[in-house]
Amino acid sequence: MRPGKHQIIRNKKFERKLCGIVPLGEKCESITTKGLKYNLNNDDMSFGSLISTSNEFVDEIVQVENSHTVLWTTCLKDSI
Image 1 (spheres, one colour):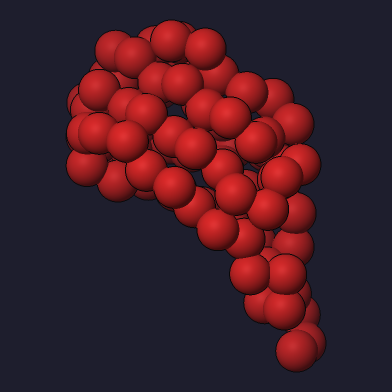
Image 2: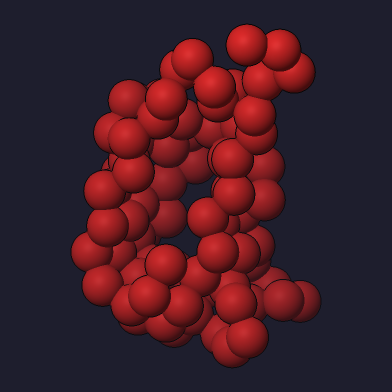
Protein backbone atom coordinates (compact mmCIF):
# COMPACT_ATOMS: atom_id res chain seq x y z
CA MET A 1 0.00 0.00 0.00
CA ARG A 2 1.31 3.40 -0.94
CA PRO A 3 1.44 6.11 1.71
CA GLY A 4 -2.01 7.31 2.75
CA LYS A 5 -5.28 6.11 4.25
CA HIS A 6 -6.64 2.69 3.28
CA GLN A 7 -9.66 0.55 4.02
CA ILE A 8 -9.36 -3.24 3.79
CA ILE A 9 -12.52 -5.34 3.74
CA ARG A 10 -12.09 -8.97 4.75
CA ASN A 11 -13.62 -11.57 2.45
CA LYS A 12 -14.62 -14.35 4.88
CA LYS A 13 -15.33 -16.73 2.02
CA PHE A 14 -11.67 -16.77 0.93
CA GLU A 15 -9.62 -15.36 3.84
CA ARG A 16 -8.78 -16.61 7.31
CA LYS A 17 -8.32 -14.17 10.19
CA LEU A 18 -4.50 -14.11 9.92
CA CYS A 19 -2.97 -11.03 8.26
CA GLY A 20 0.12 -8.87 8.43
CA ILE A 21 1.83 -5.64 7.43
CA VAL A 22 5.49 -5.43 6.39
CA PRO A 23 7.54 -2.35 5.42
CA LEU A 24 8.54 -2.50 1.77
CA GLY A 25 11.98 -1.26 0.77
CA GLU A 26 12.36 1.31 3.54
CA LYS A 27 11.37 2.12 7.10
CA CYS A 28 7.74 3.14 7.60
CA GLU A 29 8.04 6.07 10.00
CA SER A 30 4.39 6.10 11.05
CA ILE A 31 1.62 3.52 10.80
CA THR A 32 -1.76 3.40 12.54
CA THR A 33 -4.36 0.63 12.26
CA LYS A 34 -7.87 0.03 13.49
CA GLY A 35 -9.72 -3.30 13.38
CA LEU A 36 -6.80 -5.65 14.12
CA LYS A 37 -6.07 -7.74 17.20
CA TYR A 38 -2.76 -5.88 17.65
CA ASN A 39 -3.43 -2.35 16.43
CA LEU A 40 -0.57 0.01 15.70
CA ASN A 41 -0.70 3.59 16.94
CA ASN A 42 1.64 5.95 15.12
CA ASP A 43 4.35 3.28 15.35
CA ASP A 44 7.44 3.05 13.18
CA MET A 45 8.04 -0.23 11.38
CA SER A 46 11.29 -1.62 9.98
CA PHE A 47 13.24 -4.86 9.66
CA GLY A 48 15.20 -5.47 12.84
CA SER A 49 12.48 -3.68 14.77
CA LEU A 50 8.66 -3.91 14.64
CA ILE A 51 7.05 -5.95 11.85
CA SER A 52 3.42 -7.05 12.06
CA THR A 53 3.51 -10.48 10.40
CA SER A 54 1.14 -12.36 12.73
CA ASN A 55 -1.86 -10.17 13.27
CA GLU A 56 -5.58 -10.94 13.00
CA PHE A 57 -8.77 -9.31 11.81
CA VAL A 58 -11.14 -8.48 14.69
CA ASP A 59 -13.42 -6.32 12.54
CA GLU A 60 -14.62 -6.93 8.99
CA ILE A 61 -13.09 -3.62 7.92
CA VAL A 62 -9.53 -2.61 8.78
CA GLN A 63 -8.33 0.99 8.58
CA VAL A 64 -4.65 1.65 7.83
CA GLU A 65 -2.82 4.97 7.65
CA ASN A 66 0.84 4.71 6.67
CA SER A 67 3.60 7.23 5.95
CA HIS A 68 5.62 4.93 3.65
CA THR A 69 4.94 1.95 1.39
CA VAL A 70 3.96 -1.27 3.19
CA LEU A 71 2.93 -4.73 2.06
CA TRP A 72 -0.42 -6.12 3.28
CA THR A 73 -0.57 -9.92 3.65
CA THR A 74 -3.49 -12.21 4.31
CA CYS A 75 -3.93 -15.95 4.75
CA LEU A 76 -6.21 -17.75 2.30
CA LYS A 77 -8.37 -20.70 3.25
CA ASP A 78 -7.21 -24.15 2.08
CA SER A 79 -10.47 -24.98 0.34
CA ILE A 80 -13.40 -22.87 -0.70
